[in-house]
Image (cartoon, rainbow, N blue to C red; front, side, top):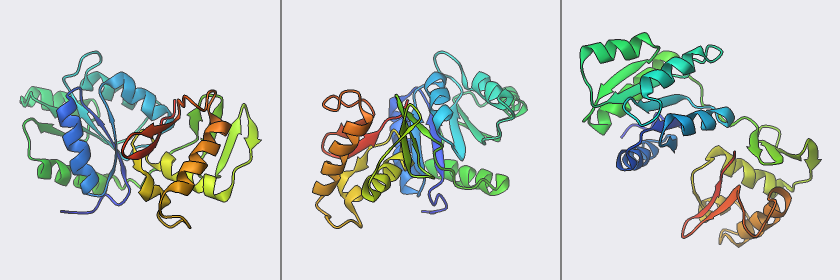
Length: 230
């Protein structure tokens, strides 16, 4: 399988839980970072805090459909994030409508995952999108700037250790997705993950309103941790 993904970040938007999970797993195996959303409203909120290299967008969804969301995206300060539309409707009229609204490609369901991957790779090569990373992430009263490694609360800088900065960066890189605690511990002095647990506890005291019931730095049972920005 191609590994062209190389840390590129995809947003998959589909109201079908099964399809979302399958695409997330398949595209992650291809080397992409994948964030998912069940509808256009959640996708819009994610895009306020994260940059994406490409959006895989279902057309037929409850609420705002993929056509409308694509049109709104293109009207948003000229946002040129590539969009690949997925739909059960393969009519040429629908395809033309999607492309006329600014979509980069169109794939009718059902489709082979390999074809989707090849189309994604082609779009990324054509658009020359560079790997994206998160901007400053909003965590309630706090904000984390991954590039600077700075955590602030109401604009005031909060002191972080180097280990805490690195941990937050790793979690921010995969925002809204669970990260295995042993993966977080890789390359540290304690590969068992115990040090990660300690750092998470300390970070919660700095970020969370109620550290014992964390909203932003969440435990994912049996896996590890997830950073869930606003």
